[in-house]
Length: 185
Figure 1 (cartoon, rainbow, N blue to C red):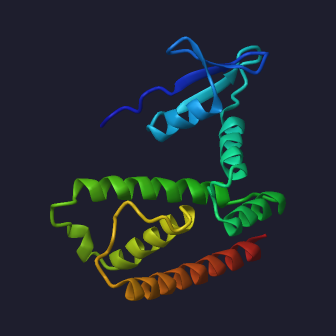
Figure 2 (cartoon, rainbow, N blue to C red):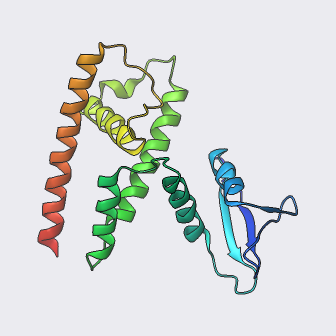
């Protein structure tokens, strides 16, 4: 079992400058974004109060990418996020997103591990549907830029039809989940 390395500690000074404690130099939001893209976890804390500001800065990084025209999240997803947080009551969205990204990361690492080895999970009932849902989710999150699994080898027309069907299944499941959640409220 491998231990998760400690996050890179970034301290925010009263002047709002961000200080990398490992390299003893100042960094920008773009630098922090690069650390994260390279697989580093970061923690940003206010030097004076000790408050954890990581979430605030990560949201700011996403907002800056969006303002430059780099679509991070589809508009429908952003609308759903706003609705879920502003609707009052407890939202299951944070837990759902966390579990989805964990499943995505785990799935990607397992695919890489089993790339050239016969995967016994492929025989598991429902595996193809789960894999299709993961691919559709990844495409939705990346704006259709593709997935880590690469091309499926099918004709583009057949692939597009399959993706539309998969997306319809996911939409139906999401609508059912939303209906169940609204009944709980």
